[in-house]
Image (tube, rainbow, N blue to C red; front, side):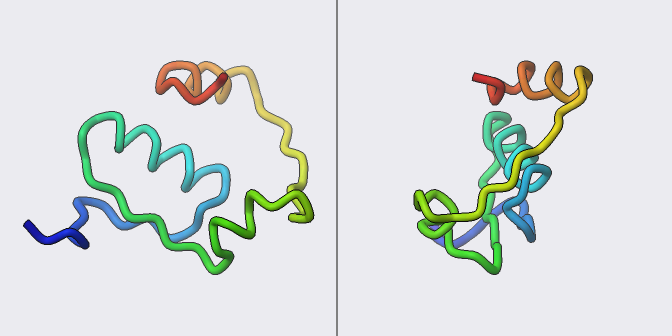
Length: 69
C-alpha cells in the first residue's frame, strides 16, 4: 500500500481543518493535513495560540466527534 496515499487532503490546520480531519479520521478515512506552519511549531509553548470563541452549536459538533475534551 502507498504510505502517502490519502482519501482526503485538507489545506490548513486551523480550527476548521483540524476539526474536519478528526471527524473524517474517526470515520475511517485516511487524512493528510497540510499547513504552512509545522505541527511541532504549533504545539510549542512559545507559539502565538490565539483564543477562539466557540458557539454552543460548534461545541456540540466537537462533542459528537470526540474533540471537545
